[in-house]
Length: 446
Image (cartoon, rainbow, N blue to C red; front, side):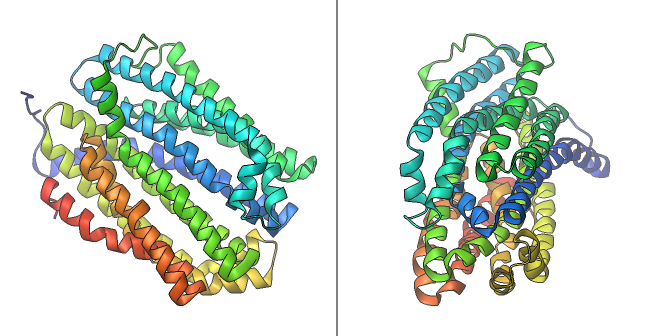
C-alpha cells in the first residue's frame, strides 16, 4: 500500500502547487506555442508566397500528420505515464525499461509507416483531396514530407519523456532547436529557392531531424533520468502501457477521420475558397490547442508522481488549476475568433477578399468550441496521468470520434456551410455532459 506524502496545507500548499504546475506548464506552453508558431509561419509563407491553393492543399494532408501523431503519442504517452509513476515510486530502472520500450516501438512502427506513406504518396493525395484539382499539389508535398514524419514522431516522443521525468526545460530546448531551424529553412526553401510545397515539407523534416539529435544527445550524455537499456517488460506490462495511451490514440485517429470529413464537407459546400478559410481558422484552433496541450503536459508529471506516491489531494488540486487556466485560454481564443476572422484570412491569403468574407461569417461559430475543448482535454489528460484508461478513453472517444462524426454527418446536411463551422463546437459542448461529472466525482473539483 502506498503511503501518502506529507505536504504543506492551506494557502502555502496551494501556492506551492501552483508554482510546481507553472514550472512544468510554462516551458511546455512556450514549446507548444513555438511549434504552433512554426505552423503559422509555414502557412504564411505558403499562402502569401505560393498562393491560397497551396495553403488549402497542405491542409488536406493534415489527416496523415494526425495519424502519425496518433501512433507516436499512443506509445509515448502510455509508456511515459507508467515511467512517471515508476519515478514517483523511486524505481529508475523500471522507468528506463519503459522509456527504452517506447523508443524501440516508435522507431519500428513510425519508420515502417513513413516508408509506406512515401511509396503511396500519389494514392494518398488522391484520396485526401477527393480527386480535386488540389491533388497534384498535395502529392508534391507528401512525396517529400513522408520521411520527415518519422523524425517528427521521434522528436515528439523524446520531448514527452523529458517532461515526464520533470525536465520541461530540456523538452523546450528540443522544440527550440527544431522550430528555429524550421523557420529559417522555410525562408530558404520556399521564398529564396522557390521550392513551394516541396520546400515546406523539406524544411519540416530537416528541422525535426535536428530536434531528434538534441533529444537523443541529452539521454546519451547522461542528462536524463532515463537510460537506454534492454526493455525486459512482460506482455502484461506492455499491454497496460499501451492501454493507458489509448485515449491519445483515439483522440488523434479521431482527428484524422473528422478532419477528413470536415474537409470533404467544406469542399462540397464552400469549395477551395472555403477550405482556405477553414485552414486559417484551424491555425487559431491549433494555437489554442497547443496552449491547452502545454497545460496538460505540465499537469501530467505532477499527477503521475503524486499518484505513484499515493497523494490524491495533489492530483485533485492540480486538476483545478489546469481547468481554470484552460477556460481562460478558451475564452481568449473565442474572442479572437469572433473579432478577428476577416483580418486573419486577409493576412494568410495575401488579401483574398472572397476568402476573408467566408472567414468573417464562420469564425465566430467555429470559436464557440474553444469554450469547452480546454476542460475536455485537461480532464482526459488527468485520467491518463492516473493510469485510468477507461475514463480518459471515454472522453477522447466522445469528443474525438462519436460526437464529431454525428455532428459532421448531420449539421452540414441540415444547415450547409453553417453546419460545417458548427460541427466541432457542438461535439465539444456535448462532451462536457460526461467530462464534468466524471472529473467532479473522481477529484472533488468545485
